[in-house]
Image (cartoon, rainbow, N blue to C red; front, side):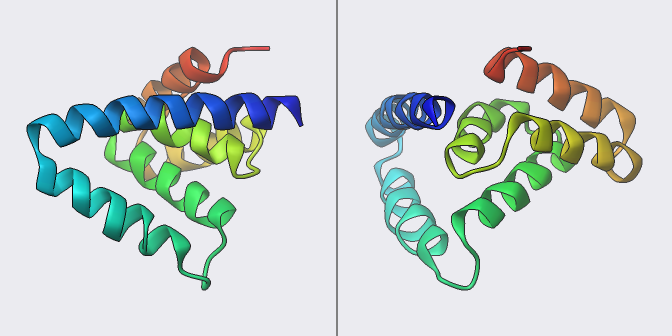
Length: 116
């Protein structure tokens, strides 16, 4: 439980800093991110937050979007996905998204989530 609360706090802090930076430079994009993406899409009842996190992280791995993993990997942990499940998802995607994408994602996950 402590891992989840730590991840949630880190996510909140990081998300707030990123939101402020985005709002200062691109206020409309920040507003749409808050209102549409996180205010509507992430709140729709058809998928729970855990499933949305897994889907989002899988898309980031497949697309090689390692910078966005810094927000979404901790969010996934806070939403109930274990570090082992993230690593397994990345390993599985190596065969579909490509080895370089998977290796890059594993290295980013290790950096973000530690190797303990």
